[in-house]
Image 1 (cartoon, rainbow, N blue to C red):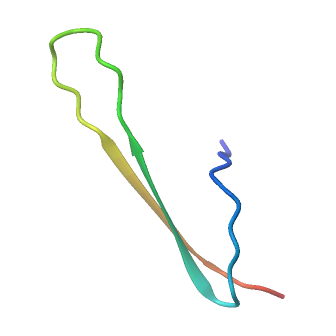
Image 2: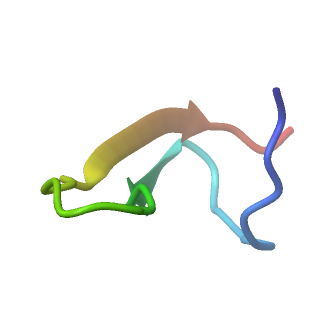
Length: 46
């Protein structure tokens, strides 16, 4: 699965970090907790 988050710019050998928080919907009285995801990648410019 590929998700488009936003355009970005980077310089040579920069670390890019994306943080995403997903909050499930609750249809009842139960407690729901958010899920946090973090992606980090070292990017290069040719």
